[in-house]
Image (cartoon, each protein chain N blue to C red):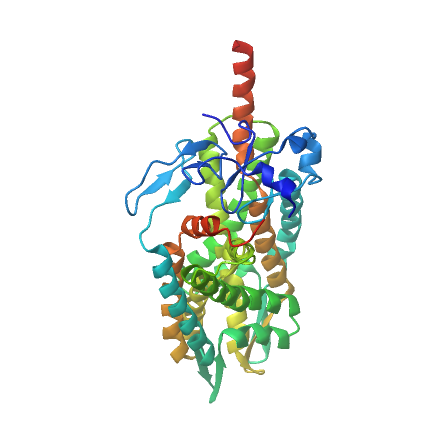
Length: 217
Length: 225
C-alpha cells in the first residue's frame, strides 16, 4: 500500500466510537463491565461485547475442538446392520458416498460444509490466537481472520448433528443402528464449537490486531 | 446523531474501524464509488472499504430470482429414491414429510417440514419484501424489518438438514437390491436453493433499510434551516 492511503485513517480513538453494522448510526460505547453487551440504540444490533479472558478461553475451546474433530474423523459415526451386512459411515465417507452415485456437486457441498470449512475455522482460529498470544502478528493475520469471519456461516457441523439424529430415527424402524465411537466425540465437538463461537469476541481480536500494527501499511 | 455516511466516514465491514473518506474519493460521483472504481482499503485489516455493499440490491435480486427458479425443480422433482426389495419409490420433499407423518413420526415430520418447506418459503418472502421495501423507500417499522433480516440470515443454513439426511442415508443404506437409497436431481436443486438464498441474504445490506429514513430526515433538516 502506498503512502497516499494513510491520509484516510481517522484520527478518532479507535473503538469507543463505532458505526452500527446494521444501520450505520455512529455511537459512543460507554465503558462496560464484564459480560455486558452494548446494543445499538436504534436497531438493537450487538455493537460490542465485554468479555474477560476471551482469547485464552477461545484458544482452549479451539484446541479441544481440533482434537475432537480429529477423533470424529478417525472412527465411524454410525453403522447400520441389516441382512447380515454392516454399513459404516463417517464424516468423510458421507461426502464420498455421493461421489459413487454420480452426484459430484452435492458431494462437494457436503465436503465443504462438513469438513473443509470446519477444519479451516479450527486451524485458522488456533493459528491466529497463538500469533496474538506470542506477539507474532504479521501481514497475513488480519486477512486470514477476515476470511475466517466470512466463512463462519458455511461450516455446518451442528446441522449435520441434527441430520444424524433424524437419520437415526428414520432408520431405527427398519434396521439396527449402531452408534460409533466417533458420535460421542462428535457431540462434544459441537459443544466445544458452540462454546468457541460464544467465547470468541471478534472485537477483542481486532483490537489486538489494530494495536500491534504488525504490518507496516 | 449521525450515520457514518452523513459524517463522511466509512466503517469497515469486518473490523468496524472507522475511516475518513479521502478528499479525492469524496469528489468522485456516487456511481463511481458504487462501481468500485475508487477502492480504498481499511487501515486495520486491509479489506476494501465501501459505505454500502456494492450493488447490493442488484446482486440480491439476481441470487433471489435464481433461487426462486430452482425452487420449482427442488419441489417438483424427487429428492431421493428408496429401493426396497427391488422396488424403487421416489420421494419429493413434501412427499417425504407426508410419508413420515403417515408412519406416525410426526415430530420428525414437523422438523423436516419446518426446515425444508417453511424456512425456504419464509426466506424467499422475507427477502422479496425487504428488497421491494428498499426500492419503494418505505419508512414503515425499520427496526422490525432489520430484525426480519437478521432472522432470515440466521435460520437459512438450517434448511441444509434435509440434504445431510439424504447424504447420510445414501452412505448408510447400500444393501444392493434389498435396500438402498439413491439421491435424485431434486436434492441438488434444493441444496442450490439453500445456498443461493444464503448468498442473497448475505449480499443484502440492512443499512439500506435505514437510508430511506436518514435521507428523508436530512431533507427535512435542510428545509428547516
